[in-house]
Amino acid sequence: MPLQLPADKVIITVAQTGALVNKSMNPNVPEQPEEIIESAYACYNEGAAIVHVHARDQSGENTSDPEVFGKIRDGIRRKCGLIIQYSTGGGPNLSQEQRIECLKATPEMASLNMGSMMRVSGKYAGIPWSNMPQEIETYIARMRELGVKPEMEVYNLAMFREVNAVIEKGLVEKPYYINLVLGMRYQGACDATPKILTLLHDFLPADAYFNCTAVGTAQLPLSTMAMVMGGCIRVGLEDNIYYRKGELATNAQLVARAVRIARELGKEPATPDEARAILGLKPLARS
Image (cartoon, rainbow, N blue to C red; front, side, top):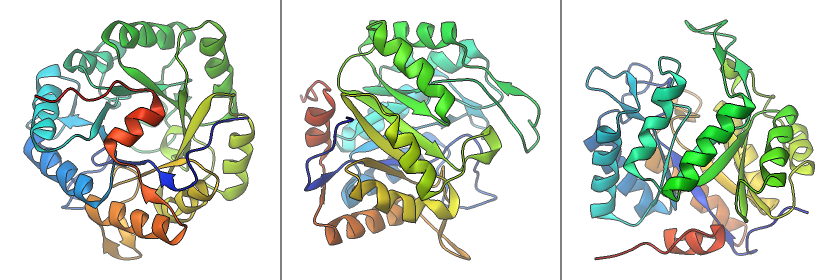
C-alpha cells in the first residue's frame, strides 16, 4: 500500500508559472525572478510548503539557466523556508541537455518525468516530449550526485513501468514521491476525473507518498479528493489560471482556498519543515 500523510496534515505545492501560461492569459502569472520570489513568499504566508519553479528569460521564454534559477532560489531563501523544487520538464523550446542544467542551482527537489509523450495541441503539436528510460536514469544520476530528491511525475498508467524499474534498481530513495498529473491534454495526460485518480492511485508502489496535480476546472474537486485520500496536492497558475469561471486567480488565492478546504476536513497545511521530515529531506540549514 502507498503511504498516507498524517490524518491532520496536507502538503501543499504551488506551481506558479509553468512553461505555457503567460501574462497575456493572466496578468498575475509571475515570470521574472523578482515576481516569482514575491509570489512564492505570498504563497508561503498562505500555507504552501513547496514551490515548484519554472524560470523565464528576460523576453519571457522558458529557460533552464542556472543563474536565473539561482537568483530565484536565493531570493526565496532570504524570505522564507519553502521547499524549493525545480522543473526539469522545462519547456518545449529546451533540449534534453538544457532541461537538466537548472539542477546546477541545487534545489531540494526536482521533477522527473517518467515517460515520453506526444504534444497534441498548440504550436508544438506533433513534437514528442522525450523521456526515454536511459534519459530518466541520467536525470536521476545527476539528482543523486547533487542531493536532489526526485518528484516522479506520472501522466498515465504506462509510466508506472519506469517508476517500478528505477525503484527495483535502487536508484531512488524511500519515501518515494509520485505526482499524478491529470488533465494536461496538451501533453497527452489522462483525463482529470475521480475514476482515473483512484485508478492511478491503485498502481502506486509501497513506500510512496502521492501528490495530485489536476489541470483547469478539475484542480479544485480533485485536490479536495486527494486530501481525503491522504495525499499531497498541487495548486497554482501553471495548472489553472482561474479562481472561478470568468475570474482570474492569483497563486496566493489558490493556496488560501486549498487551506480553507483542508481545515474543513480537519487538516492543517504542513509547514516546510514538517514536509521535509515527512518526505525524508534534510533539515534546512539556517544561518
